Image (cartoon, rainbow over all chains, first blue to last red; front, side, top):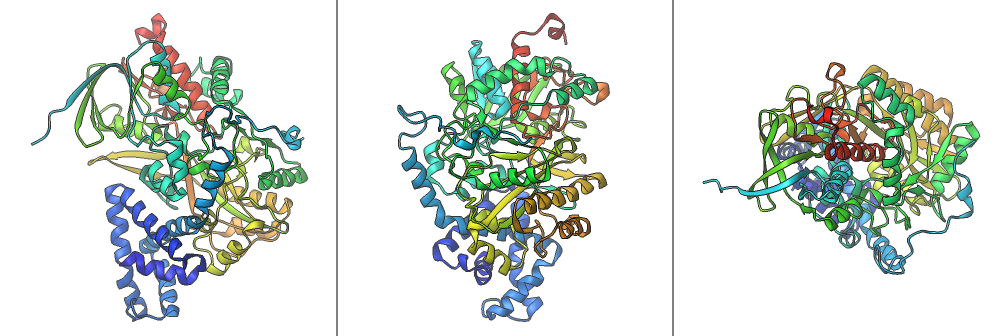
Length: 142
Length: 493
C-alpha cells in the first residue's frame, strides 16, 4: 500500500519515525486526514499517493517492495520534484511527521495537565488565575 | 425514495457556533427568543480533548483536518474550526481589541458608522469580562517569547504582551488542537453554555444545505441532521454565522448575492521560521506565545512564537534535508518555532461548486510578495538579534546566520516554494454601503433581505491585521443588539 511504502521510506529519513507507535500514529493520521477531506480532494490525493509506487518503479527501474533503502530514498527525492505528485507526497509527509513524532509525547502532556488541574475546568477550588510572575510588569517595549 | 424532512419551528436560527454565532445565540436567548444553534461539527468536551492526541483533535476539530487548499502559486493551506465553538476552540485564545484608527478607516471608507471604537467599547468590556481576558504573562516557561522581546528591544522595535482569553492557562502547549485544561475560554465553554442557560438549543453535526427564500424573507432552512436525515427549520429570524468561507458559500448556494458573496475575501497568511539558540529555550514549555512583535503592524506584519512540539517542528521543516530536521529534533531544547503573520491585499475568491464543494483561489499580488519577503527578512533579523545562531526559512535551503544572508534569501527565493498557511479569513460579505462594495447593511442584512443577518468574520469591512476574534465578537454584539432593538429607520431597511 502506498502509505506503508511512504512510511517505510520516511522512516529511513527520520529515525524518530522508526518506533512502531510513531509509525502507527503517522499511518492513522495520514489515512484519517484523507478521510476528512472534501470528496474531490480526497479522491485526488488518494490517486496521487497510489501513483507513488509506479512512479518509483519508472524513475528508479526497481520494484519499490524490494528496492534497497538508497534506491528508495533517491527515488522519493525525484518523485518529490514532480509537480502535483510531489505536493501530495509532501502533504502526506507533513501529516505523518506531525502525528508520528508527537505520539510519544502526547500521553505525557495530557497526564501532566490533568495532574496539574485535577478538578477539571470550573471545579470548586480549582485555581482560575496564576499569580503574575516577576516579569509581569514588563508589558510592552519602550 | 427521499425521506420527508422533519420540521422545526423557532424564533431565531443561528447557523454556526463560532465567535459570531455564539454571541448572537446568547443575545437572542437572553432576550427570550426561542433560539436554535446549528453546528456542522461535533460537540467535544474538554475531557475528550485532553484524552486525545493533538493529531486526533486536529482531525476531529478542524474542517477537512485543516487541509483545505487555497489554490494559486503557492497553494496555501487554510485551517478553521468545525466543531461546537468553531475556531475559538482551536485558536490561540488571543483577544486583541480592534484599533480605533482601523475602525475609523472602515467607517469613513465603507460607511460603517456606528461601528467605531466608541460604539464598540462597551461590547469589548463585556467580552473582556465574560472571557476573563488579561495580559498573558510568561510564567516559568515561554522563553521563546522572552527571547523575541529581547531581540526586539535590541533592535528598538515595539512588542507587546499578549492579551488572551485563557485565565489560569496551564501552559499545556496544545492551543491549536484544543485546550486540554479548559483554561481557554472558547465559545464552547463561555457564551454557548450561557446561551443554553437562557434556553438556547444547540444541534451539533447538522449541516445546512440551502436557505429557502421568498421575496425579502428567508422562509426555510434546509439541513441534514447527524444521521443524514433531512430537517427543515422555519425560523422568524436567521443569523448566518457559518464563518468567512461557509457564509458566502451558503449564500451562493441559496442564490443570494451569488455573484458577489465571497469573491473578495481578505486573509492573513503565516510563514513558519525555525530558530536555534545557543542556550536552552525549552520552547515546549509554554503556551502559544506571551509576546508579539508589533513594530510593523501598520504594514500588516506581526511576529510571534508558535507552539513547539517535535511533530510541529518536523512538519514545519518538510522539504528541508533530513539531516537538518534530525539535527534540530535532537536539539529540541534549543530550538523555537516562530510565526510571521502577513496581511495580504490579494483577495481569495470563494466559489460554491455543485455537490456541496467549495473552491478557494487566491490572487497574491506583487506587493504581497514584497511584504512576504520583508516578513522573512525582518523575522530572521529579529531572531538573530535575539541570539539565534541559525534561522531556518520555511522552504528548503541553508540556515541563515547573518542579516545579509537573511536578506538575500528572502529576495532570491521563489515564492511558489513557500509553504504558507492561513487561519484568518474575513470580509467575504463586507458590511458597508453597496456603492462602496458592501454586501450587507449595519444590521448584517444582505441587501434585499429583512430577516437574514450575517454575524461572523464575513461582515468585517476589511482585514484586521490582528487576530480577528475580538473584532468579530464586538461586531457580533452590535449586530445582535441592532437586530433585537432596531431603530425605526433600520426596521424599514
